[in-house]
Amino acid sequence: MRETSLLLAAGRALVDGELVPDAWIACEGGRIAAIGRGTPPRSPDRLLPEATLVPGFVDLHCHGALGSAFDDDAPEWDRILGFHAAHGTTRQAVSLVSASVDELVPRVAAAARRCASDAALLGIHLEGPFLADSHRGAHDPAALRAPTPEAVERLLEAGEGRLLQVTLAPELAGALDAIARLVQAGVRVAVGHTSADAAAARAAFDAGATLLTHACNGMPPMHHRAPGPLPAALLDERVTLEAIADGEHVALEVLALLLRAAPGRVALITDAMAAAGMPDGDYRIGALDVRVDRGLPRLADGGAIAGSTLTLDRAIRVAVEAGAPLEAALAAASAVPADAAGRPDLGRIRVDAPADLVALDGALEVAAVWRDGVALHEAS
Ligand SMILES: [Zn+2]
Image (cartoon, rainbow, N blue to C red; front, side, top):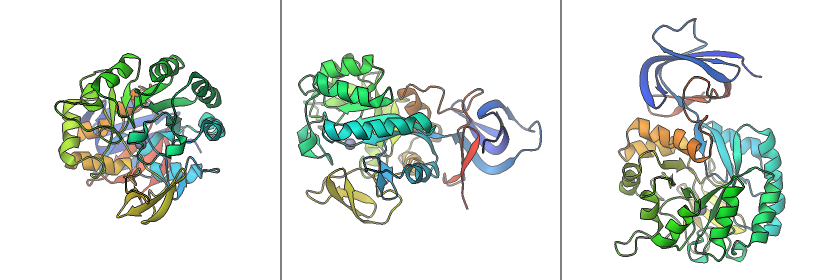
């Protein structure tokens, strides 16, 4: 049920990107109506003296949780979204792995219908099938293909305006035309799972791509004479770099470098697959078998890292562990991805913004979560 009025008071809050002590936040009709310091205008509904109130997290790249993936024939939407909401994610993308266009069209159409009725969902992220075989990671090689105009149009049509983001390899035949078409249709294009050199990455950004999918993963590493896509993205102010901050996909030193080299342009993502929130064991990503050992999924056949079991609250803790200031780590999970998704109304605590709020305890663990002023989660 929608709470029309909610007043929270906390030890501190991240207001418009800055940590403010003794803060209160008044919400009306699902939006933030007023923000202040000191004595609140009335007795608060929740008094959280030990907590930090921060914006709800925004995840641009997430495949599932609790044994279910968005690629499944019947995804367990409520369980997946509820799991990530309990870790502070109030808005997220529906990431679909590579499959044939014939298989993707009904999946995209079903996801588009869900997006139309679920405030948690920002839209669909197609991770493939227009990816490089050489850097396919956990994508089915049989599904990979070049982005012909016909394939692009079929996916756009199936998405009914709900395609948020498409990850593609810009060196594939027809990719630059596909980027232009997708951007024209209002879809963000991410460079990823690619063998592109720096020039090919720059050409993609000049054609309208604005993201780098899980920076460092699924692309050639930076070499001083063959820099690859990473420096091209770091040096381009138009580009947001996704990072999987689980301490495994990207070493802490490299994560710290990314955050320093591109301030305000690194978006923490989970890339969480079905095993998130589940014990170690055997799972699937699309058509491929995956084994999860100590929380890290790898392809059963070959051993490539295959998504993660990460949640965004942990990503923030890992970014802080890597040396990021708390404000920057929080922005990387909220304002930065919100802007990259074309939703600058989200991801910040400010008057008139949707009342998407997370209370973090002293250990940066999630204590409570609200979306549109409605409680989604309360730590027991
Ligand atoms: Zn990927």
